[in-house]
Length: 343
Image 1 (cartoon, rainbow, N blue to C red):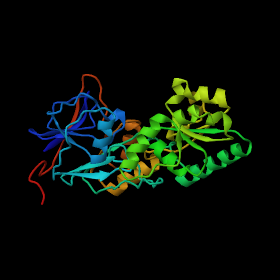
Image 2: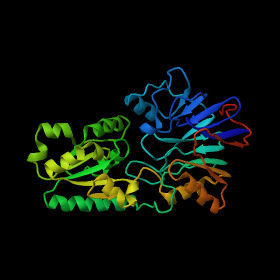
Image 3: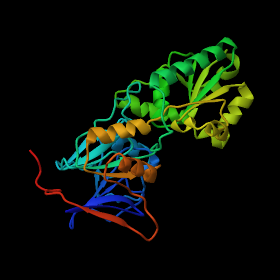
């Protein structure tokens, strides 16, 4: 017997004597902590060096440490299987005792060098639902990239530089890869730091100059049209406005949220194209069907809505949503959990 529950630390599964927290938002009191990937909303700086045992991939561990998170060495345990979740480099879901599968953030689409997630069969599925609402359906990756290339081509023809915006870790490396044929290619320094980590991990990121180098050498003013890749977060800190005002650049943002037309205006972008490192609604349904679970828990984003839709499809589904002062617990049967190691 084990329980799946959620509290103000995050999601936990466990028996009476062993617990594992899944991407907790602060230091929990548990035996194990699973860290699915190195986005900062899945990391926290209070993990003690000699405290909880960390379960994560070597790449996630490397990126987290380079981002300033002082984690002890990752723990390897045969009762856990880490499966590529297709989200960003090093991201994983976790399969516990071949019975419970936690997706973490997940994508099942091939995107440049990123492969689709590996989906196991499992009796219990804990699945993210960031885009778990039926109107969040994305076009094919190739279609989005083709549309962006058409816009860039037209702007180059007019002598107008273009700035592409995506998340610093994950999205920006995909943009660097698929748009490297445009010259000169300029990369924001914060993205360059992440690109170097990707290169160290075997994904080539080259043939560009950094923004600081370009400004120092007066490239942005003296060259004809150029292409820059910058963090989408810079829409809010003034960097995008600075580039657009000083150099007359056109902006293209990449986000799953751009399915909604208001997103472009809220971010101050000229164009915004649907591109996400998460599953869209239809992809999430496909994950559930492939996993074929007896019980489904949804978390994050549209957790309540997605669980409701799954129930209409015949699944036993509940959202894992923490309400202050209340801990949702559901006992589940599992013959062996954190039992003997497999050979």
